[in-house]
Length: 429
Length: 182
Image (cartoon, rainbow over the protein chains, first blue to last red):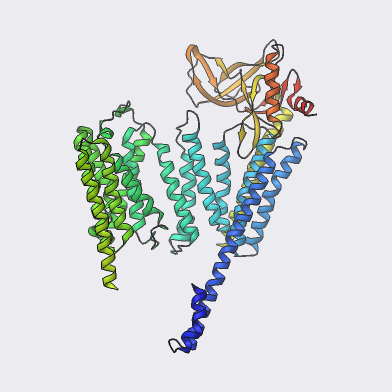
């Protein structure tokens, strides 16, 4: 695109559309853009190179060289760590602020810690499971995020500690242990996230990637504290997703593009998924083997905490934007909590209310899409209705004719609303 | 700010070196000063994504009879002794640190008839990637001959333990695998 504009500049000057000075400013602007994209490539290849070298060393040392003595193996294992530390020291003491070097060194040092711990574990045949190993690794790697200001290390730490949480709670035989250290490590990364990206409103690629990993990690690992709480824990999840929606719509996390706003995407999809799950009568009919008195205290505390966080965020958000401007999915947790207690008394009423709630949510989404002239949001609302009808396709006694008519209705709706919006856009132009 | 970063960097480097350094120090001390015990075992060969191939050792001396109340996850000090065949067997369990060499570990669960099962932290023996499978095969062959025994040599002292070798009929599994490969 920039090349086409640059090529067209002499023609535009000759035709008198722009003057020489403007043409020169356009040229300088695109030259600068070009060097910025070149720097981005350097950073990407620097990180990839460091990661590949680091992981290569991990694999080579995982061979377990029996012919080498224990002391030689341990020394070899520590060398990459020392090399990484020397590189990092050089950057810090010489005040080198080169992004490529900082990110590459952070990624290499991260791998070198893993190498060192692996080699020592091998050399002394240490037992212990993968979770302990990952936790030690991540705890030693987190300070690198602050020392080097490395976004790559932050991403690797979030991924690693998520693996730790899953390993401890989901992947281990007779697992389901809560992973308190997961929350501690995530909390230790957050100040860097705030001071590096949120406070200065730096919404670069690192911000987008770290945000995505953070949101997915929290979504995956919230259930690690939800053992023995039955379906009550879904309140914690709806509250988390509502809080995500609120965050995604706030100025602090707003990115201006839907796909780069992980909070909004995951929050919105999460709310819809849980409400759809709860729209089945069977969901409310299901009786847990657990008595309410046997619910885990930690799980109940987490449900209360997540609800409190979502409620506080909602109050702040409503005060700053006004009730009408707030995304309806932000209220989903309040609706879900109300229906939860009604559904416990009558499954049919619980399911009916949930269906109505989803319908209202979908209508508001369609309305919001029409108001913002945004085809994506409009079709998302229609998709929610389609998903709701699909769910009812399986658990209602409606005749095939009625179901068929419902689908035709939604199909016509899809066509009509999209046609209306596109026509309106053409009219505006 | 720069001073803070330098101090944090120095502390980070120290921690990154101190953690593996402490592991090395503890295990070297166990190897030189610990009391060796032979733990009867049966190895199989799984793999760890970062640390490579190892043989998992499943020991018979991982439980004992004890009337005291023990809950899962509780810390326990295990004192070992040797049976008439020279293999390690549990002497007693205690909550206080004993005079004799002991292993500090955690209780898995207390089963029926007051049998307490605990975790033995030396359940891995790392081998060169090509040798773990032959080691398992050598063990499988050895089990067909009931006269053969397989055990891990474990040094125990001051709460820690380190496995130094695995033997099949008093021969190191590494020597047996090397012999098979040659």
